[in-house]
Amino acid sequence: MKTILGIAIGIIAVVWVIVRVFGAYNSNAILSNEASFEVLVDSNSFDADEFFGLPEGTFDPEKHILICKLPVETEGFRPSHVSVRTDIENIACNTKVEKGQYIQYQPYELKDSKFELLMVHKNANLIALNSPVGSRLILAKKSLRYDYSKGRLNRLLISKSGLMEYCN
Image 1 (cartoon, rainbow, N blue to C red):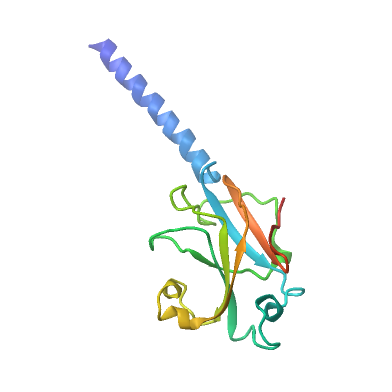
Image 2 (image 1 turned 120 degrees about the vertical axis):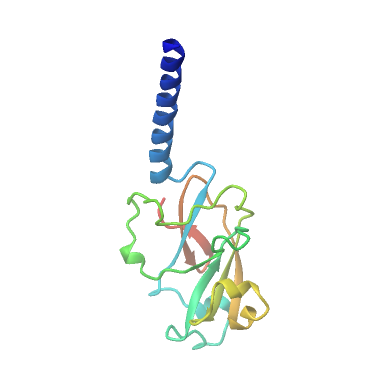
């Protein structure tokens, strides 16, 4: 009886240690089959009107924002669109990714390599952009292709030639 109890306690202890170690690893890293995204634009050198082929003065930063539709299919549980960040001078490439800081997309959510950059009204609801009502808020869109990496945070910079990795 003591032997069985000792074995049971030993198994429980080993499982507890494994769960703690994997939990610590999972909370501090993006797993090798997951991907996270952050989309950036250098607002000093990026001309949205030229990029989308619109008349000069169409994009007004006070009224419009840039949104990137990610190559994910989330079924409404996670956002499939992210706001494009314009503060690239505040991006530190060597910072450690903290749990909850970025959305980690699972392998079944990751689809192809087609990103879509949207110019929308500032008051647009990101969830509604996929509906016919929300599509009226889209002023312009452009498809971009980029082969992102799994197992890391993909910091992508929008340039005239498309998407490129910001932090190598």
